[in-house]
Image (cartoon, rainbow, N blue to C red; front, side, top):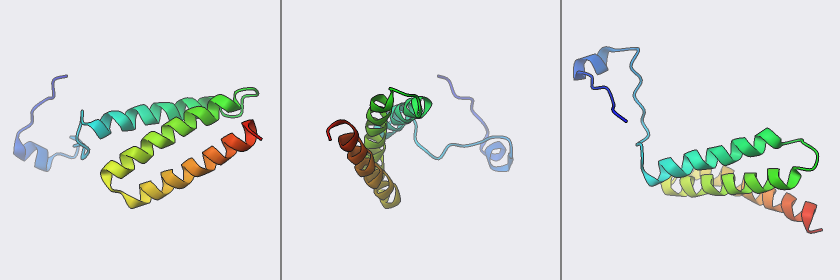
Length: 99
């Protein structure tokens, strides 16, 4: 994938050129996109009768991967959000399918 090169002055003064702050093609970059795909897949089947197991399973995988990313980033807010979210999902999983 070839990136277009811009002059430093053009980058500094442009309001149309957007610069990503996140590094690309690193381990966390791949994990976050895979995690996001799992979460979107889970959301797409949420509420469909008979697919609750798949919804919870895909959500657990996606949130677990996002928890990994948040640990790699050392972002405490994301660790808290994804850690607690994972606990809620696992609780619902076990209550729904094991109890």
